Amino acid sequence: MTDRRNSSRRSQAWFGAQGRSGMLYRSWMRNQGFGHEVFDGRPVIGIATSASELAPCNAHLTRVAEAVKRGVWQAGGLPLQFPTMATGETLMRPTAMLYRNLMAMEVEELIRANPLDGVVLLSGCDKTTPAMLMGAASVDLPAVMVTGGPMLNGKYRGQDVGSGTHVWKFEEDLKTGRMTEEECFFAEGCMARSDGHCMTMGTASTMACVAEALGMQLPGSAAWPAVDSRRMETAQAAGRRIVDMVEEELRPSRILTREAFENAIRVNAAIGGSTNAVIHLTALAGRVGVELGLDDFDRLVREVPTLVNLMPSGTYLMEDFCYAGGLPAVMAELLGGGLLHGGPVTVTGRTVAENTAPAERVDSDVITPLDAPFQPAGTGIAVLRGNLCPDGAVIKQSAASPHLLTHRGPARVFDSPEAYHAVADDPGLDVDENTVIVIRNAGPKGYPGMPEVSNVPLPAKLLKAGITDMVRVCDGRMSGTGYGTVVLHVTPEAAVGGPLALVRDGDPVALDVPGRALRLDVDDAELARRRQEWTPPAERYVSGYTWLYTQHVEQADRGADFGFLRGGRGHEVPRDSH
Image: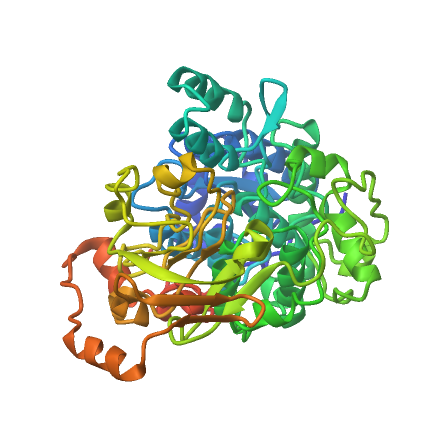
């Protein structure tokens, strides 16, 4: 084993200090049973774990941390585990997205404030992955991501069921009488049947794949199921690797380059990934000073077909994706077609091209070849512009109904998701299949936190009539497990005076996804008159974190990060006070 001792390491400002200061740091650590020899200059590796029973996707990460520790010890480092908050979308109200920035702040400050030379980031539920990446990127110490892995496939009456995706399906079945309350109650217990995050290509699986595509996660590790023993092998390998990364001074700033972000955007298109990746990647790019605009997410994916046949856009689930070859097989396919940069360095110390060279596609139904894709090029995320979304909006084409991608219909406006839900089951609701449902005040500032509420269920009377989709427009987000013709992230949001605030019942709304347009067909003079009448909503928060959030959150096109967190702050710490 290579001697990892080095008196100049960052951690030695604590553990190698002379006199009273060094004695204090070392003596308190020794109450955990550490011998004096572990303070000899070897790399000190933080294991940041978001394990929490309040975040079911992350509940098993304590066991993953143990595997990481084994790897760190093997490589001659000192592993020190510490907790972070867990932003679990499954339970948190009003939305986990409200707390993504808080978690990123906490991760950043914990890494900076403690005697760490490198860090392994343990995440699971969808906001924890970008939050940890954002925090680590701002500190810029060597870091590697280990996601907790997807659950095993859900099983109900002989069919595979996907977390999230089948929640929406079962809800529709319940409303239309195709499923009873008792059957629904039984089915929910068949959906999440092991440790892990969503096994559909929801945001958790998407961000795990995105972390791997960026080069921040070991190749192939995004897809191993949480309960597969190879998930623990991967974690142990990450523990070994982070010690080498400290030696090599391989920091996020060397990995998170413009080319790496372009790779991640194209991979997201190829896997049929979540629209939430747009917001998270934009925020992460802001932390490392990479210019990434909303239009990049449209331009870079026009030539990229959807290769992965997974719910919600397709048939299979993450367990199938893993055994079919996982993300390396997808990246190899894209690289062979000239759609990825092969040169960016990754946490392995090798390039993307070197990492993907041994990849093999095992099942061409799950991971389709580039010359016979699951969906053709140009069916990924589209960025829309127009007088209803001057700073942009997005739509996931692969999850939408083709016949609705060009549509014009009258608006039916609701000032909150709750206002819609209050009347959605009313048989007298004045809507038909041509109606465009507009949900506003669900943006970053307006809700607050930009919840996953945009794919509201169709009105019950239309579901019973056999209508399965209709156009919905919202300044909020949609779960990556969701589906439907839903225009998301309308920017600026209604709460800050965006045009969405001016829409009235009956206004014609024109959606033209091929033309990348979303328009409100109301003349400019009338819109100007309505703007004169509009008054901003009263401030609801005067203190606490939610006040901080509403005062400083940026709009969706800039990643909904805090403006004061853009850019890095390095790893320097305040002067020692002892």
